[in-house]
Length: 115
Length: 114
Image 1: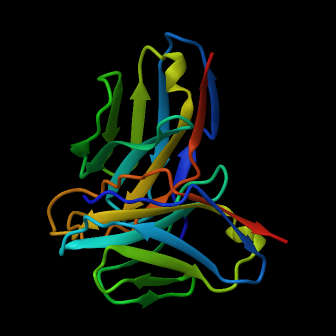
Image 2: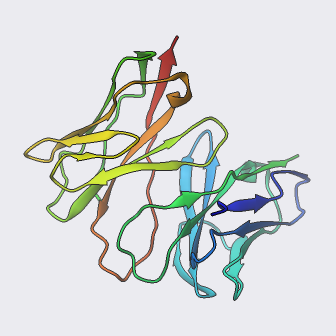
């Protein structure tokens, strides 16, 4: 079974621009979570989507948004990029609506650099 | 979810058992202990989880003390590929509703030495 894929793997953007990152979950998985990882703050939860609906949201400004499509693929968008948005963005895939275990499957991440 | 405390770093000789401790003294009765690891520049990888009994799988063993205030992840024969940051996470038992959100601490950086 193919794992979680994220595209692109690396991205360089300029302050003020916006960016869209993509995540394809494991086949059959319907929940997608997004995390941001920085050296200073570590791994932080951004949001989770299930069945095209945001189910949970972390403590990030409104510049960070996401969506999920009917095929469970998800995108996250960051508008008006700031230098502090430079980070590894990780996507995690989980089976479904009923949460029976917190075993999640992470993708390799997208490394975003804002200059 | 209960807070966890882990040593920032540990070394282990290749081929020896790596024992990674985690303190979770405020854990409550319905909270599980989860372990993940993150090899450099990759996404975290699930290792194992448990409630009160010791657990073992093909990757590791999890030993939880009787009072559940601490646990130890054991990698029986550490290899260079086990060099990673190991995260201990305490999470309330899944109840069906809710979300998969995980809260990661700073973890323990394990270096396996040849």
